[in-house]
Length: 386
Picture 1 (cartoon, rainbow, N blue to C red):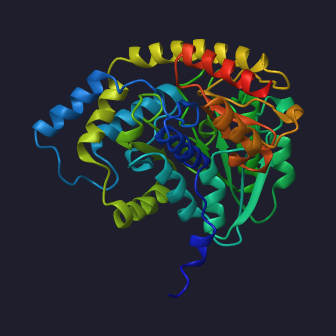
Picture 2 (picture 1 turned 180 degrees about the vertical axis):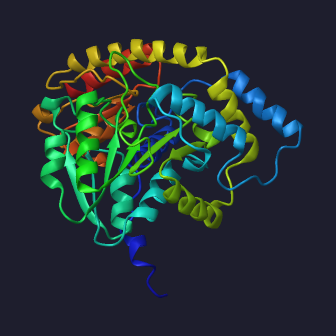
């Protein structure tokens, strides 16, 4: 058999699914495993959102729709962006997608040529670096520093900008650290992009999942008309991970061409799921409020618990639902510790190195589980390390 395309040998998988498979193998052996690996809210999709989808199916809204998205959902997203980012995009600036991940792919496929450089956070969501490598582009990870509370530092970005820099990826609130960039930091990066004529992909999937911090978007500088592409979706905030619904907002010319990618790759986003998205945005936000109250309690419990483990130290995340404890004083690598915790404590988390070289020496815990489970996991980890 001839070799596959070059990019197929460089594209990477995700550590979350690797460790989920390991945990499930343990469970098949009869072992009990406490799960902290998957970034998925453990709450059900709110009933009014499900009812909207059921009603759409009953009304036979199950066929093809416009590749770029149904107008009613586009209008709801226009209202959402106006309310949360302070400007109103045009219909032509909005593209509806089956999940947020296609937004990462389509943005980079549409903007990045081989040899162009892409700056992105390290540690960061694995898909960023994976797609960079797939496209044979210049890989420019910028390390997030614990002393800066894992916020991406504009000065570090400026040092890495060259004539080849085509795209800067921002993610705030951030996966895997839970950090939230300040308004000044966001504005500085937006200014750098403007001065150097660089696109920004602002991954804002956790924009509604905040604790003490406030959300800020780089899009306010150009209203996504020139260089900023907003990426957002419904999976996290509305507990709709399996529904696969997301969107991008960007310059009309870019969105038009990305819509052509959508036609060729996916035809359209599921029709009745888009109707549910309208209900999510326009309906009651009480389930989101209750979910974030629960996540705040869980955050406090897991941060306190992790800091009670000898040789562990953990900052308190300001957004999302992840902690990123430092385990360097244990003398183990991230993978060694994650494996130890899984096989000796029955707790599945992720090695920080799954999110890039900058994650070595850390672990990621997704605290999408109960406080009782969190406390039990801390107890079992402590016992395994004695």
